[in-house]
Image (cartoon, rainbow, N blue to C red; front, top):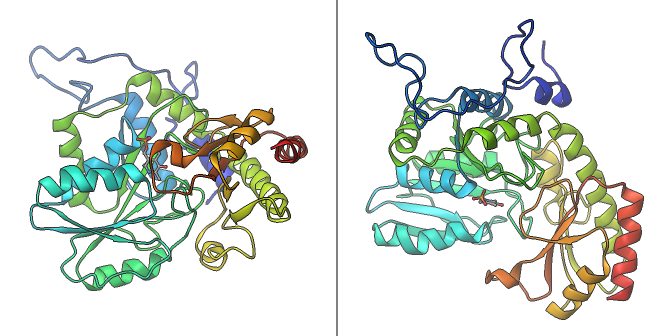
Length: 366
Ligand SMILES: *Cc1c(COP(=O)(O)O)cnc(C)c1O
């Protein structure tokens, strides 16, 4: 029996039903566990390497991504683990020029110092010739500009040149697209965003169907230690049960907000891959099962963004995205290379009619 998304997330990673036990067992707080005095380690010896709460979350994410998963203490812990576990001195990595800026900063610092060469490519292409490349990291939709690339097509070209392909699936979530099924070797993501969705947990993961790559990343994590704590792990698992419901409302809100913003002549550069007029629409609608709740646009300058955010009652000024509350971030304040009036708006799960009214009033006042 294959179930639909709402059913899959409710049951993802849960143990077999047992009378008198909870559906999702509570977090296990342990660093070392009791050992058998004679036989030594069993299933659990030390929490950096084995943890029952973590195994259940990994089973859940693995089911949703379609390949075994390893969770990390943040998205950056997962992405840097992948890069450092796979790349060696003299290797070349292709990274998105318009993706999560901390990944580029890491490449320009640590990776360069290790003798790893970085080639930047825009998510929408054109992509360089992949010969001599060890790893291509895609981010689609890209954060914050929301361009989309054809995972199947880029994976085929990379594989033909002998390169590995990893996809940052943060913005889409595993209910939005499954990069492993589209030909990628690995998925990496921040679970801090829509996957957990309550703005209260930092989480990351790597998933792959390749046993050797999995073992490499698992050994890396075991030896470097960036594992999430038991309570965060449990909170994340609990939150995944509502992923389908949250994404449905976020996506519905984003469709309405993108239409509203596109119709105003005091807002420019509206991007949402679900808009028919969006440059990413064709690839997104072919490749993605649903379009995330993030919309980007430009209000011209920092002052106007500040007036808009001050006037809005339902839009919190905050970085990150994918949470149940609507938030907006003027990315340039963090020193990334977006325009001063560029805003990434993350639609929450408020009622659409309330959100539209609030945005309209705030834009009118700004
Ligand atoms: C937030 C984000 C990350 C980093 O995740 P953290 O959990 O903040 O470490 C990586 N990639 C993308 C696309 C992100 O949005």
